[in-house]
Amino acid sequence: MTPHLNPQELFGQIDIYLFDQLLKGRFNPRMRVLDAGCGGGRNLVYFLRCGYDVCGVDMSAEAVAHARALASGLAPHLPADNFRVEAVEVMSFADASFDVVISSAVLHFARDEEHWRGMLSEMWRVLKPGGFFFARLASSVGVEEQIIRLEGRRCRLPDGSDRFLVDDRMLLAAADSLGGELFEPLKTVVVRNLRSMSTWCLRKS
Image (cartoon, rainbow, N blue to C red; front, side, top):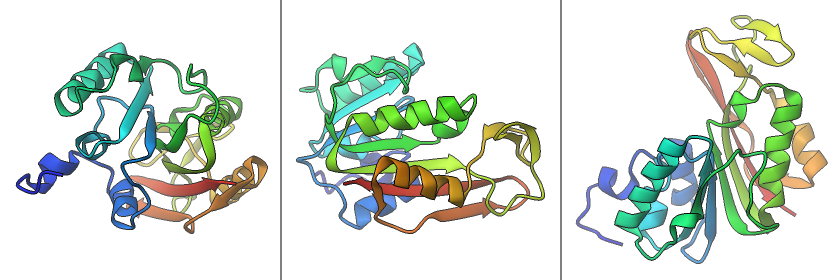
């Protein structure tokens, strides 16, 4: 830890609800962390600075190059191969490889329910028993009267974006089917006339 850093330098642009999990002491530097759909690594700055074994995947080669560059500056001991250009639903990591899997604003880009379940199943596959799964994703909760249904669960949100939307019932059923345990109640934040985002935190039994 480097105490002289200001909060933005220490935590980067971390998702505020992932930051909440850090404050609650869910994670420690002995853990191996995967950001599935890592982008340029905005959620990984703290983990890299604090000695976690960090990995990431993303479909964008440019994003993965940025994440590798971030890691090489903050945690030069990590191999470049920890960051891979891969689809979340087809990852090359071994079963039960990670103590923590992060899925921040990724699952709502699913094409359809089969794709959504494929991504979820693959993230669950690489999570160790007893491991933590953290997801933030768009939902229909609280904006049911404002969305336009396109096809299946693909909907247009009030902000004009098209997303795959879940609801509490779907998330609870998915947790049951995985054998996952909610370690926090489902939480949803509605941004008035724009979108709704749910936080879904599971422990793998």
